[in-house]
Image (tube, rainbow, N blue to C red; front, side):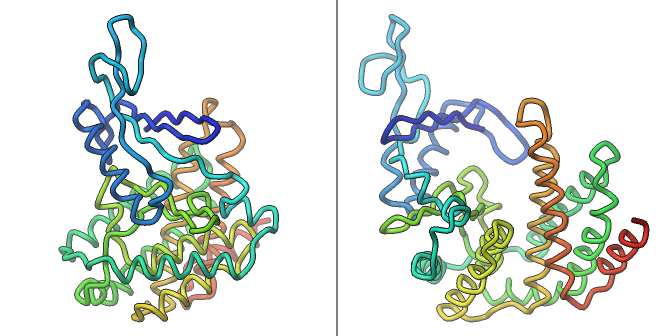
Length: 316
């Protein structure tokens, strides 16, 4: 969706002129709009990182510049470059992380969600969109050419059962104005543990993807930390949010949130397994996400995934 150019202390992000079902960068004006949205939205959690939107100009000589003369041919988001060693995923991998750093992130997120006004969401549209998204998960993970159906059938079925069972709870949370405009893609590689902490790279291109239950969002970040080997982080994140805003979902709904996100990530990883995008990397990661969905569901009271796991174990 974008080209990213790195210098020693700056990052410049240029959006590609593409159009998909979930975004539209096809015109110069739309790219300018979404550059400005990226700046506005990301300054909520990374004000010191997102610096400006700059016009890219082309002179008659054919050279490009930000400040010279010439026709504006595109727009670029300028950011301060963050230290890779301080990104949360890297800190977990190297073991340079402790409760103090996570506590700062947990408090930052809790205060952020507490200050965001609730969304007035059409309940039927909200549920239909999520269920449609899971239908896409199912369709892709069951594809013969991806060879994931054997391990994905159980979690996919369990998530569908949970959607039915937890429908009234989800509707209750919508009615209670808990849903808000969050980040949309809260993962460890988007969290930088400098002072003050910076949380970058929200989904500026699609507002519907940012409208979310805050517990879903912090739980997703915690699940990703689990997969990197730091399961102690998730309880801190969820607890800080509960202390600040209350109204924690049921265990079953949290399991649904986790498993749905894991299967969504599995689907995205499965589709990236091409010669262009690091062959051999994405399929193993897709399998890891399916297995994480199993783990998220295994402690719940729903039997579908447990039966599927036992069947698979019996055939080995």
